[in-house]
Image (cartoon, rainbow, N blue to C red):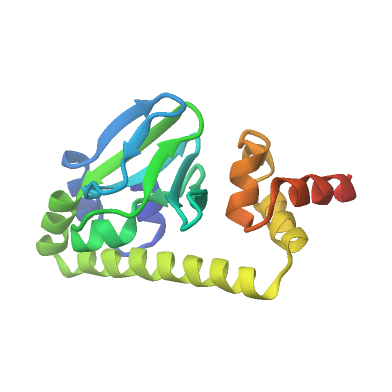
Length: 186
């Protein structure tokens, strides 16, 4: 997380070093649930290695994958984290995963410590918004093949470690459609 934050070129070295007191490093095993639906998301997680998945249940009682976070990416149930309200999502590890986490309270302390930390907070929210907007637009403008090709291009190694139903759900297609798409790309 610290390396990522440093890459934004906003914080001074001393401001960046403040985070050391607040980061909690954890290793979680595959299938470990990090946040249950109806719990409050109290931490922002950064994936050091491994993969995290968030999902919710739709009106048909089916799991819908809303986000997959790979190495070097952040994960949280953002509406719950930002508002400190109950989450509609569940977050779990898709494989053995190392994370660095910072609590809501400690992140607020950093925001209160300097304008640079407030700028970091704004930048993180802006980046997440852009990602979500791109994901939404991708769903509206592209078909399942194009969405899958995007995943292959950007996450070639990690993609093969994720169960097909989760990938299909994330892409908004059936597992049968995903199988056909994969065969056509071979």
